[in-house]
Image 1 (cartoon, helix red, strand yellow):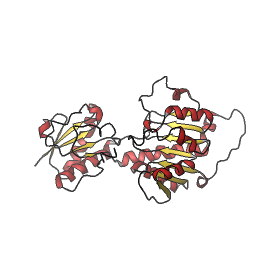
Image 2 (cartoon, one colour):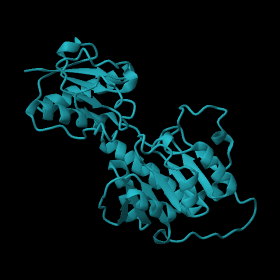
Image 3 (tube, one colour):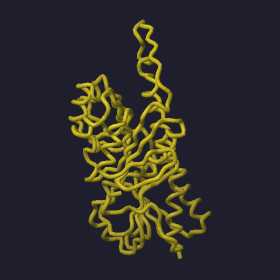
Image 4 (cartoon, one colour):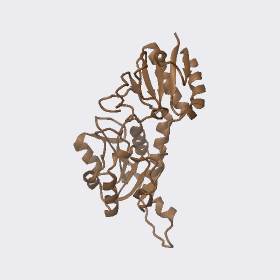
Amino acid sequence: MTANILFSARPALWPVYRPLLSRGLEEAGVAAALDTDLPPDEVDYVVYAPNGGLWDFTPFTRLKAVLSLWAGVETIVPNPTLTVPLARMVDTGLTEGMTEWVTGHVLRYHLGMDAHIRGLDGQWRQDVPPLARGRRVTVLGLGALGAAAASTLARLNFDVSGWSRSPREIDGVTCLHGPQGLERALSTAEILVLLLPDTPATENTLDAHSLALLPRGARILNPGRGALIDDAALLAALNSGQVAHATLDVFRTEPLPPEHPYWAHPQVTVTPHIASETRPETAAQVIVENIRRGETGDGFVHLVDRDLGY
């Protein structure tokens, strides 16, 4: 039997994904019809991104699963018409890219590179950083992305703590969980990395109260989600010196409006949502594997828990 697969994402992605998915499905032994326009009542799987224009899943009466091309699913989960299994993207290429971005900016902060890049104004200041083992880094969120970043930093000998909603175990990382664990994780974070999902429970994780728990002069990296930070509270913490610097890759409104105070703030570095991206070559492999599983009854992977929102 042939599996009918609807590709619903930005049209520009179709020429990229079509050969990758077709080849992968053939190699996996899955007979499939793959297109951007199929009768809804004949579709078995939807390869999906919210910006593809599809929102109403009601007509898809034989749908087996929706397979997201995005790691974040906060815009998909609330859809009341989506009642079949939803799988988020857990992509090795995306994970590697995020780990590289986080590691690079942690090292930048750790080594004090900004001062040398901007220039020392003729002053011979020999501010030697500690070794990595003397620098405390905290990663909030220990899913696939957070765990990979924390592990890499630990292998570089940073003193790494990580926090998650539920217990985790990662070699070389002090893993904390629960409300008390969060306070402890924040209290030691000289460099704080935010890699939590965007859910009602994580919105404004960094507010005035939690920012005050950080060691004075802490530095913040947010490649996770814009809603994790109370922007007004962060700006106040930057202005008071409680936070020395923030590098932000994600924002509540994107692109970040030209008038937003982050652009002009001397203690903020803005990067335009480039920390990582789904890589078609590896993402196609994830999609193919889930379709194969759906056709053989092995059970889908990376399924979203609707109650938790990720």
